[in-house]
Image (cartoon, rainbow, N blue to C red; front, side, top):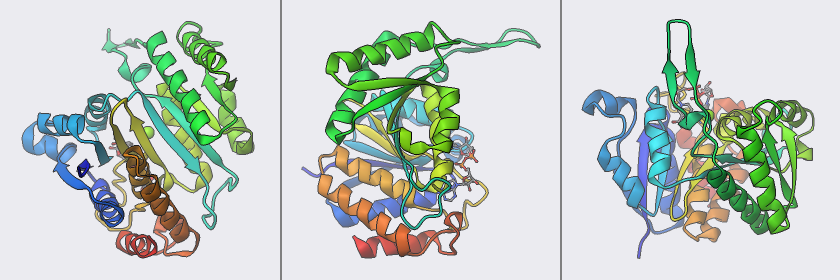
Length: 325
Ligand code: NAI
Ligand code: MG
């Protein structure tokens, strides 16, 4: 049976980079695409940023490819991650030969907790002066992430992982997170060490090679992976996979890039690399490898979009990737 891929472009450059990735998917395999709407424009038209049909499509399709949503991002992406049952966001950040990077030796994978922390917390405005946020960390979610991290390093032939946390201050929440993930590593016989997340931010800039797989709470994973994007040449290069038990949602780390949206010059690499992660989740490792190597080849000597110092359009870069598949 042909796998069904839900396609949600969203807003801004999502409308430019998602179609590019769909062309690439179409070239490497046999997939049935089902399009659905979400984001700011959908909110304006329908009164809902994430219509029920879109949620249901993501919840039932074999995989979902998502671009980005604008100001409604939290109302779109958080429920979509929930629709696919995602508990971890996998964010590889690596520098590619030929791309001008601050730290060309960077090769990291962030495993970001995807269901709780401050993003699932309740925010309140108590008085004119005081606002509050409750942060939720559970042993259940931390254990599931720890289990995933152990499997991930095993499958990838990695030596182990590092847990980034701030348990010296947030003793209960990050303490529970750190201790639970470490206990999973110990039970699985996987090497794991820990780092305070603020110290990590400095150390990864000075010497990214000392890290490999980093397991993070939700907010920390969001911020630290964007920081890593800065080390490798920008947000246009970072894909991500929201992994659930049965299906996943694949999206670039970047947003709608309103400063360049509509100009046809967005870098499609992050979304095309997300599509590679998508086909791998469907068991099509060959197609994934094919996509990755075509993107790497174009990044090394092909046309480049302006974010990478070139003058090429999204169309030209996509054509170059298609030609090298
Ligand atoms: P952004 O990632 O959209 O843009 C940050 C900077 O990176 C901009 O200068 C942009 O031009 C550049 N950039 C990003 N992706 C690029 C690409 N593929 N090619 C070339 N340049 C690229 O982040 P920003 O500006 O903080 O947010 C803009 C909007 O996106 C906001 O409305 C925000 O809510 C939304 N957003 C949505 C996300 C999602 O749907 N998952 C994630 C992050 C932001
Ligand atoms: Mg982010």
